[in-house]
Image 1 (cartoon, rainbow, N blue to C red):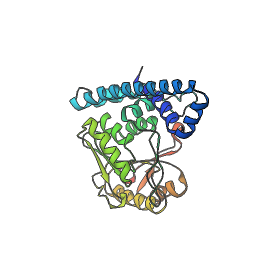
Image 2 (cartoon, one colour):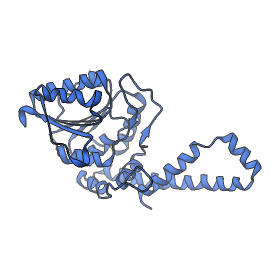
Image 3 (tube, rainbow, N blue to C red):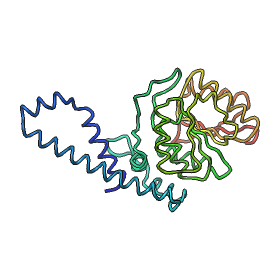
Image 4 (cartoon, rainbow, N blue to C red):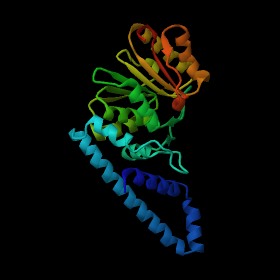
Length: 280
């Protein structure tokens, strides 16, 4: 069974186990004793799937640590699985593989949202692939993932190219999880920064990725900072999210002549690709 298929099963088992009330389960078992054997079998199967998932993930992590799995080959491995939506599930084979490797669920809760912050949602594999194609980051580049959450985008990009990748995250629980994940792969070009994005020196950045991490005042401040960078050097901003109270701040930098907006693309209508107007 593939790593992605193991992750799908793991998620299904986890959903059942996390949504069962122990007291109610005991009552059901007393009323129907045969349920105890079924529940025991489910728990045993879940443990087997988790062990297989751990082993498959560790094998890939070992290859990355040893340098035997190159960035190009790693990228080919997850992109080659495809981005077709699974029937009945908001996922793709590429997403299942990446999330199984990183042990990252699509939506992560348990962290209080800061003012103007959003619930953490892992980037879709199709968007990560598109970002890599649009920006073609290389050894001289520094990619910033602003509002990186638990690190799916940052880790995937760092393992898929030679650019320096820096994830910035305000939520302590998220950034600790991202760091633990990153340490498994020992990627020398990966760093996670626990800070308010407005307090971070991003002057070395050449590409900036944002998956609707914040809105309002924070989005306005970040767009203004990126506009200042764009006036001084060639940068690319890949911003995914709504135009209202988020995208409008980047479009303001377009109207002011700092950034220029690339034409909208059919498959990525929720994405704005912006580049330094002076260098376009």
